[in-house]
Length: 409
Ligand SMILES: *Cc1c(COP(=O)(O)O)cnc(C)c1O
Image (tube, helix red, strand yellow):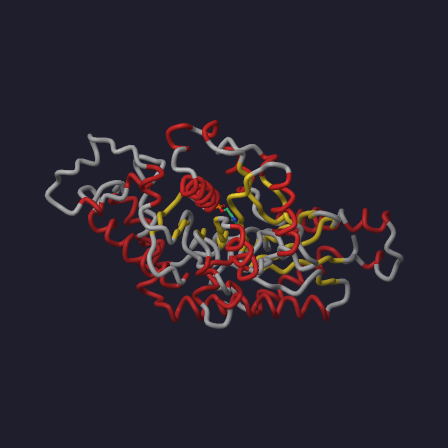
């Protein structure tokens, strides 16, 4: 994955400072449940969490490092349910109404996994329609909320995605927040992918209104280029993570310690021992500063725009939509298929281009770019810029290489 032209998923590259942090993490082998066994890292977590809370615009709040964005989303689903129905911790789902959650049809699949894991059932995750850019349509959200109520369900949670996994779309957070406010629903922002945009003055408006959310997922291991795994769930409701998940194990979380036990953060988690995911992020931030992150994240967005421009200009390439995050989605049309009528057979031929070109790039070891179908779209390329060292000339290489591998197919 540290190949400079790995553009296959939402991570890539390698920052030397954070790699040093990783090695030190393994050397120290500390677990983050209590201050007594990892005092420095407990403090570090607090510093980094406060910093990120500030970037989100949560004036007060809490957060936790989680083993990935899928788990962070699951935490949000769970604390939201506990917030509304604290009795669920003792009585279980039989003791509460038939609750349902809403998310766009383009959201990450972890929302569905979370709903299933929590025993709510996938029938209680309601898909909201998206527009041509892949953004949630707020009017459809309101319609679906009213429909669910009419069916006797109890809406409790809305997920807005900031940077969808395939198209990189940002749901209209402000408008969704209005609806959540109107119906008194928990609002979560899944910014696993796009959260890093908050570090850029130019691109943070993509998440306008995020401070109105109740919780947010943000993966520094994606747009910020921190080594895997590094993900956090944030909430503006202080104390909720602990109330929802604590078991008060007396062998670990003794309340009569000589130090301030609020630094023992382990009971906020559904885990017992917890990996140190903060050092590599802290050390990277210390080195780059806010300015360094902003510069590199801006560069990623600029590379995406540059690639989109190349794709629009170059024969045989077709941009599907203007990039919103650093995802660039496009088709490549081999020579023999250019200028022909777009029948179902034609699209069937196009669907074979992605796998074939991918095979070519992998066998050549030149780069990796993903392809996938999505909804009504047959296989298309989804190029991801998530490596902080990516430069515009890499974009030239990507179109040249796809052209080289695909033109005679
Ligand atoms: C990647 C992603 C996730 C899941 O994050 P993991 O760390 O891979 O579990 C969740 N939501 C979105 C929008 C993502 O892009």
